[in-house]
Length: 116
Image (cartoon, rainbow, N blue to C red):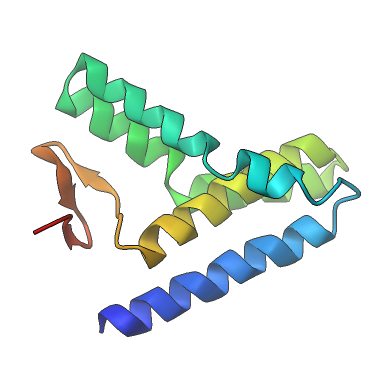
């Protein structure tokens, strides 16, 4: 089952790349920004509850999809880019087993515990 989920998430990452190709931005924007959503981990400085909430907010694919739709609907490339990065980053995280966080511990995710 883990392989099926990883393949599905990899396909979604590919979809994010496809959406990115619809923008008129240089290719380097995508790899340069792909890790930016991980700055949300800084919320863990304020405790696991705040950290989990902030991390999950910026790693929820629905947020990325909503921002993509707004950006493409109103012709706002940088807004579209933000949504594409959020969506693609979240998909790539899930390919590697990093899911949405529980408040108990950073390593407790909806895909299981990270690490051994």
